[in-house]
Image 1 (cartoon, helix red, strand yellow):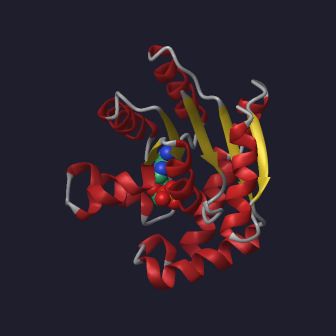
Image 2: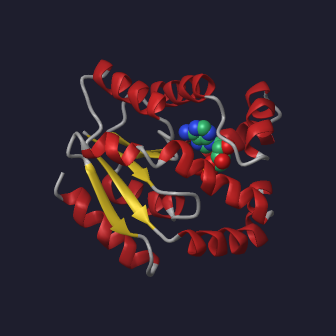
Image 3: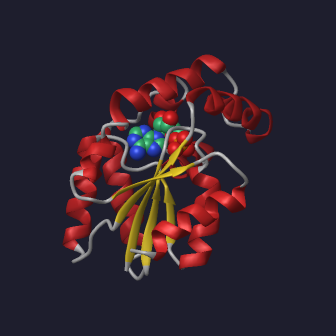
Length: 190
Ligand code: AMP
């Protein structure tokens, strides 16, 4: 069983790459952002709460996010392994994930991080905003706030996984195929 955290700032390409990797390695892909957006679309209570944070470019509170993530993992009890995309984003989330994996006699095998310069990220997200229909991609101020939030709360997780010798950085600039290849080289060795 391989459990991978696909990491990187907003716009790094996590969602795009997860789509390829889940097929290649037969893993269940869980994107917390996608689950929140699904809930917003379906007007659930969780969706309404999440939207109030997402529209500002802020993180949804840990307790809510962790409970939601646990439920998604439980829904896929027979999975061969997971690709976590957009989770964990805080130290509390990383701790909760580690506990959850332990309870399943499993573990996170690696954090694979897509490394992309901030200005490239802003450009990519503005482009995506033209077609994605995502409110948080449509406004440069919100995009910059999401990147700021990443540096405030999420970037420190590199150290969290480095301490466990589980951090692998990959250049996130290039063609989709090139980047899938770089990620696969890391995953194949796990
Ligand atoms: P994403 O689709 O990963 O870019 O996430 C979009 C938005 O959903 C983020 O800006 C946050 O507001 C929220 N979100 C997604 N994942 C998390 C998480 N793990 N913790 C807190 N908020 C999250």
